[in-house]
Image 1 (tube, helix red, strand yellow):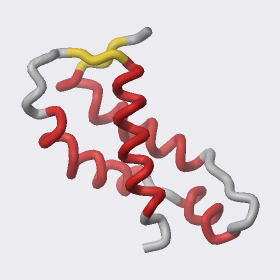
Image 2 (tube, rainbow, N blue to C red; image 1 turned 90 degrees about the vertical axis):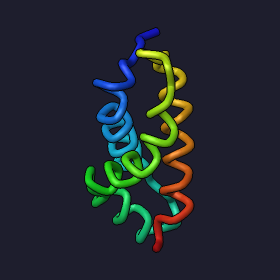
Image 3 (cartoon, rainbow, N blue to C red; image 1 turned 180 degrees about the horizontal axis):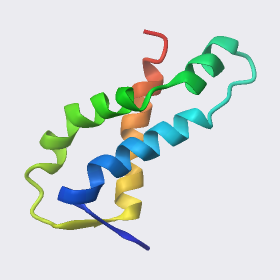
Image 4 (spheres, rainbow, N blue to C red; image 1 turned 60 degrees about the horizontal axis):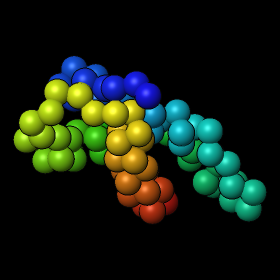
Length: 87
């Protein structure tokens, strides 16, 4: 499995992963959600990632993390976004 450099790659990797994931979501019973998901802006993902990034990764002594760990972390951020998509 691929490793991701925390200082040089992780922030952008998370933004791209979150944006791409949301763009590919679709709810059968919610036209509003589908419209929101398709129009989700990369800047919105950047905002969420930047709010959490320094607190969660700024003090991590490692230089790289496994992609699996990055995916698990991205899922936590995705849940926060999706729990509040209608705000």
